[in-house]
Amino acid sequence: MNQISSSVEQPHYHRYLQDLLQGKSIPASRINSAFADELTAEHLLYVQVHGTRKTYKAIDTDSLRNYLITLNEHYRILEADDTTSRSQLAANTGNSKLSVIRSCPGFMVNSYEPIRCQLKGKEFIVNPPEGSMVFVSDWRTFVVPRKTVIVGIENMENFRMIHRQRDLFLSCIGQRQLLFASRYPQSSDLRNWLKTIDNEYVHFGDFDLAGISIYINEFQQYLNQRSSYLIPSDIDNRLQVGSSERYDRQYKKFHNLKSSDSKLQSLIDLIHSKRKGYDQEGYIEK
Image (cartoon, rainbow, N blue to C red):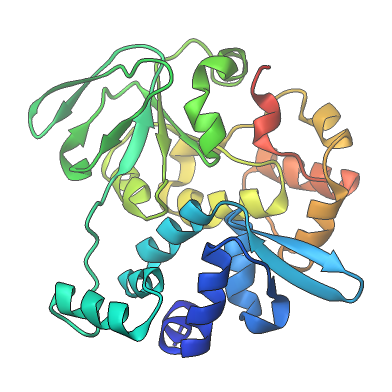
């Protein structure tokens, strides 16, 4: 039984997860360490240290709620506070076990120039005004031009502000047509779509061990040679002012992280040598 399933079935998890969703801190001893590590790696929880005690708190409660529900629809029961409301929730779904149905599959896309795509066999131009984005629900029928590079962005702030990172993308990818994609709300839909197309994929995540692990395990192993990690030319200098606390927190779990990609392995080695990690938000021009 995986951590997700077991946490759904244990009532005490409901109480502590509800505390997290209400913005409260919970003791580290109250949540399975592997599950907590997963949520921390996804940048949904952060660790607070109080002497010898450690607590967890949600970075963004809405993001945490969406992530949990995407992992397992049973987590919708966390939105109910008491027995009556939980019973009503079960009655509304017609199933006391809450059948696993995702009501809104898909992923968001963005661009800073018009891209002629297709959706359900019809022309679909992706050209959201600055400050907005497009959600693609029927992703199985979503077709983009073959030469368009798909740039997957992990952080929502970076995804929203692509116009303020043009110079970064130009220097790293060149003068090519870019379609930006986000896997928020967290699901495998973006990856499954990428597996059905032949476009080049560039992953833009945090420059730390957890961020690289997400890329290797959730994208690179499925896309192989047509995927790469975005590595800016100034990352050496950026890491010098990065977070040593983040590196120390991730080291135990990811210290054996390796990549067959020589450029990515060089980044891993650099992170180890600096003993720091750097947030991708630092590349948003102020």
